[in-house]
Length: 358
Image: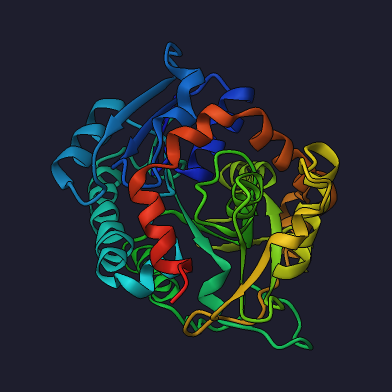
């Protein structure tokens, strides 16, 4: 059998491919546009692996998607493809609407056409066994106060950024295609991921690389924005479990049960780096912490109630924040060639735009 995955040269998607092929011989067809955060180096270990077929292309290209579905006859389509950074969405929301909303719409239409042609019932692949799994975010729920209970799947959507609004729209499309057309869908909403192959625009890899380069460690506002941190391999195991046994039409919150303020995360990273790769002058990396102007509409707190995942599917994260963050730092220290490959001139220009001093 075969699965088709989209956006799997990026951070979460490439980790999913690694996790999937570590325990399965099922072929993965990987469709990725290779935008700035898509990196084939994430998939180097599968260059000669016949179980992994990479295709460069856009989920908005209906002819290409239809051709791949017809050729490979996947039993499931998993949609990781998305523009995913809040800061980028503030400066350029159009790309987020194009990929996250229109791209998801186009993908759904192609998948619906493919699915309706499958046999209604037979041994093996049919309309009953096929699945479309859509990977989304906790940011669609909006922001929590310090005393609010964590987000549940029943929380209303209250997106506050162009990014989260585009993902909310895509989630609604997936829901509508199930209720209107009967497409067998599953949706997952995850908290903040971290781990290997993370493009260094996000907090954790940005801090690690800036610290090692002797650069400032930028903290938005007072640094007290709280996020629930989820090790990416735990997230990938959860997605595989939802695909295996999730109830059609349902949403599943995936979280790490690790609420941490951004400033505390940065201080933890500094402490691990002080231990594993001390500064030559003997000072702590924490002396590089620099506070910058907060971004517009910055949500104060996210937290996920992942009890449905544990109750219905028996999943819970294997990593604590302490074990996961140490693994992450060790990975970046051991993979400097990967780091050098992604820190291009274009990326440095982006850093200057968002974190540069006035």
